[in-house]
Length: 126
Image (cartoon, rainbow, N blue to C red; front, side, top):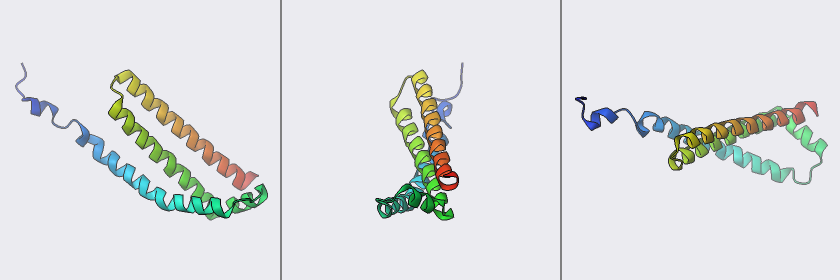
């Protein structure tokens, strides 16, 4: 027979355990995406109609390659965090939830890595 109250049994569990850290990380990612998205949109508009050689020269500049990779990392990290929240909130079957979370993490990691490698290849290899 347990002597603790129901409140005592659940204390330390729930959203206060890691929800705040997740919420803050999601907001930091969103804040990082604001200037990076503005830079990306400006770059797409400025390079409209440019050929591959012009784009390669532009991306080969150190600052542009770093900003592009930063944009990709922030974008996929923010997408991963947002999709995880949706799954955790709306998928109630534990096996489906764990499987979906694994697929989300794997897919966002693989997609982000693919974008980073493509950026490096265009910028430095050709």
